[in-house]
Length: 142
Image (cartoon, rainbow, N blue to C red):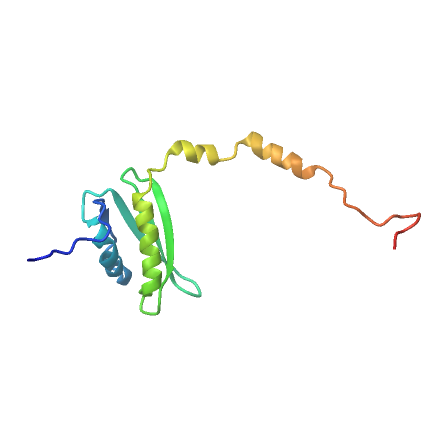
């Protein structure tokens, strides 16, 4: 009797992954287990290195329409690779973004504050707030 190993959580989405960077091989090893990697994608993953005290990779998932679905960051070591724990966390975030619903432009427009809302917020900030203070004359309770 022969058994064939199947991917643990295969969902069938097609994903394109950036090539060339040291962390790209790591992403291929983790994402291509649960997704089909190649062309004709349901989602694309882009990456860029953010320089700082600790270099990080910023991974973004885009839908076929070009809408941003999620952004995940993970620290890189001196060789430009993610640690195994950071790789697992990043992969989980990417899979959640890939499998997530298509972001709608109506939701983004609804979240943007209107000029009227901004004006009301400014007016509210100008309102006087009086705090309890020490009495100027009279008896104190102390």
